[in-house]
Length: 374
Image 1 (cartoon, rainbow, N blue to C red):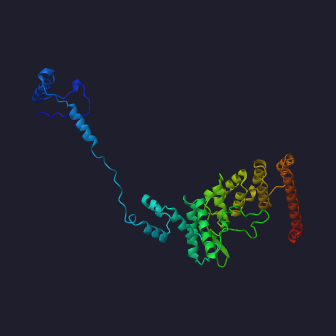
Image 2 (tube, helix red, strand yellow):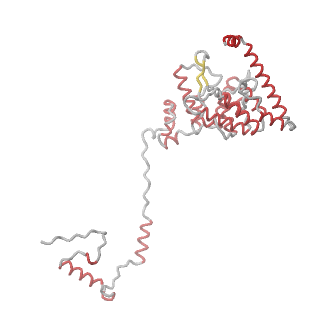
Image 3 (cartoon, one colour):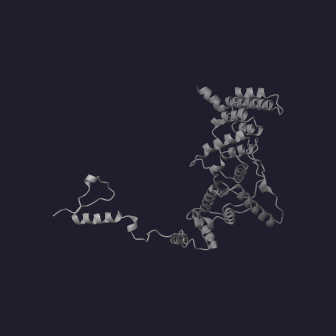
């Protein structure tokens, strides 16, 4: 019994390696070859090629065939709810991740009306009597910090909410608006850390007193507002939050390093208000005082407000005898604003303050006791 020949499709064979065929298969192939080799005259007169009318009819039918539509995803029961109910659920849960659950929910929960309502709920005003328990205070401050980190949270939206709140207060008191909210400059005085009676906006309040103002719980400024480049929107945004009493998270984030870079950028750009706001937010490392002072004088052109802030804040570590600062002051004594003379007088004043501190330290009883003990 002979084996059944098997041919593997796609595998090329040489002519010598072809599989031998049986007699019946060879006669069938010979008949097929004869049929193929007949001349065109011996074939049937009817051609197998389709006519032009058939071709056009086929192309029309193919072009008129309906295209397959993209299947729309089925909405969940939550997504099928009306917008008003979705807003109520959002405010009941206070979960800012709810719009991230699906694109449909994001579009339904992304209106300016909803943002303004959420901001006025999360941030109290200065004229409100906040009577929250400790859990509610921590919940609100965490919510405030999350809101400030959102991409939709901008300076214009914050100013619009402040304007609405100030108008509400004015109507309740029967007066016209004062426009206090639009004064976005820093209320930092180089002689004092705060203006004794600063004129602050009514909204927002970013800190809540606890135990009869024994201490405050504050929301945190996002890192996107702590570094340059310093645009007008970012400067005003940061100033409003600082005036509201916000702080920075120095333990769980890299805000301290980011703020130091932002302070250097603000000095280079001559943003005196931003320098004051950043100094209020954090007690910077005093070891960076000499480099900041040289940056403000040698590179930034010695802005008087900025230099005065640095001298007051880093007074204990400012090197008033720095030869580079004295050389710059001597070179710019004949300027139009006498900036070199002003800097030289400030350095002399700091040297006198430093000498008086050293003399008081040596004259104190504790230092005399240490000297006698040695």
